[in-house]
Image 1 (cartoon, rainbow, N blue to C red):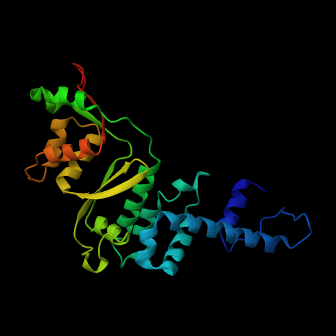
Image 2 (cartoon, rainbow, N blue to C red):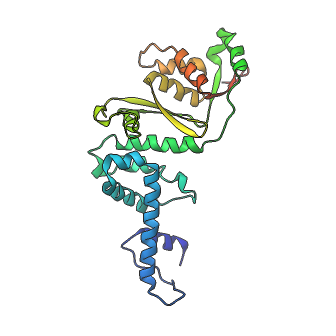
Length: 257
């Protein structure tokens, strides 16, 4: 019996007990395998529940377990580190027909998984204030400057009020006052050992995303204002500096793109 056959049977409740198994005490192998199969599924569902707490609260425990069980059977872990399990869960939620009545559920899941990524991201030393000040003394060169952001930083743009929904389920806002259909952009970043989520304007989110993709400062400003919005990067840069999310700055050498 191959490991693939065993794993497939483990996640398919309709599959028979794999051949070739034996119990040391002569007990019913099929019954013991069924118990083991159930325990594996339950433990994976619990792992998802620990990561996607707001998703679970939005739909209720029974619905969440149905949703999570369906995901587990379709997308078992590919790593022994369960902290990372669930990266595909938001896309699964978006395509899960019974969840169609809660259209913001997938983006809330994306926000919650972004917290996982931020929490486990590598550490990085913030850019010294003196180094940044030196660049600011040559404003004519700033458009070509490339900024490296902290690896624990990400942004997420959504047509739904994902930041407010998340905050309400942390006791930071009243859920009854949240309009879930108000577009919001989230900035997710780790500070010390905690992950913070805050709302930022859509142009600022585009600006940060452009910097993360490797765009120079001038290009990032242009992308932020791509919809015709007048964008001044001062406030956004101030936020990144204040939260120590800038870790490096470099001017491309002559001939570099």
